[in-house]
Image (tube, rainbow, N blue to C red; front, side):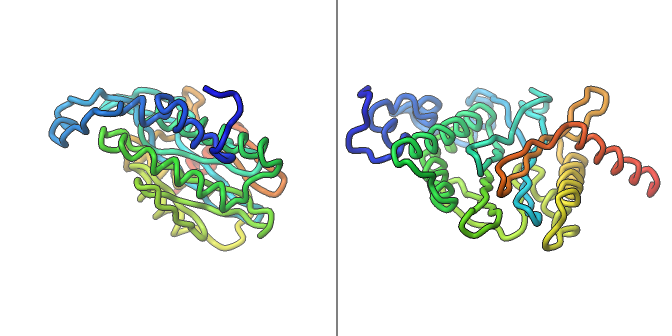
Length: 273
């Protein structure tokens, strides 16, 4: 593989497709020439079972966007992992969270991080928030062959737009279609329940603490209705993860702060029971 990119612009992903297509996730999980299995084959277990993860969400507050996800991964009816990370820092002002097949999800996040670093080093400037969202859409589109293997990967992308001075939320479909949400969004098998909770409690210009409480409540309600979504686990000390994306960059929400939010929510549920 040439050390210096030639005529592939500033996209590391395009460079990889040209020189080492075998390293593209879709090529490794769905080799060229392989045929997509029929739906009956997938249901019958012809496709190897891989861990899947749900639910992830994003919600705006007055300082930016909060992005969060539960920690559970499942294989069929079994819990494959309890501490899976589904929310990833991409660069200084953006993050993504992914629902779908766990392994390909993590590969896409790492490749997207490299894509943006590569662009910044070659061009000397960062891509705009809009440009980053478009780049991710191209990678989701390239993942389409894996969808026919049952390995769906869908992200939520959030970024702080420094020109506009606001946080932005983008969602995608499996063909790479990109859509912007104005206030909040959630995906995954518990996404509908999470969206219902946020729709009920969301207000414009939420304070950061209130946005965190609504996000944790949305994941809590999703976990009550969906077996693929993990709720808070005080016994093991496992809680959802969350990041704040604002003008000052990205901040991880500490576990102790999330634990305090859930202690309050559970106490409230007990009083109302």
